Length: 131
Figure 1: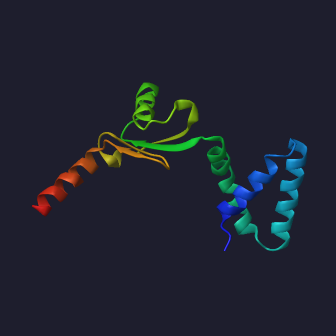
Figure 2: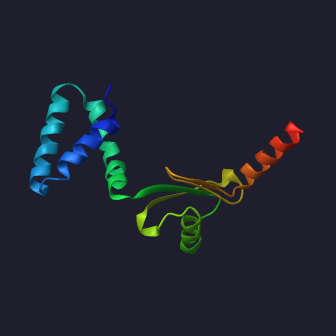
Figure 3: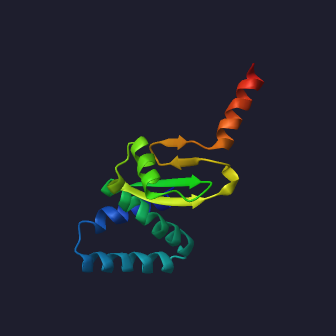
């Protein structure tokens, strides 16, 4: 079975080699074909996957940073540095979630960095349980 991501990768590979006008025409035909075949839900998922596919092709990493409070740009830069992701190559999505306690959690396709109190406490609990 072909996944929405597979469709998006193929569509990106073809359209990235075309002029903007021809790429728009091809995408329009693709949309018409999918709708005509009753594949509207799949089409929605394919189009939703396109930005991530394009970023991956361009070497851009999606980075989700969840923190208990809003982080400063300087701290975000330090987090990216610790994850060894250049700022110019990061598509950053920040989320404020007081439920994680203090600290932050940062995730990308290639790495994960956590400095949240909840995860530290869970880790300590596992240590006490295992001993």
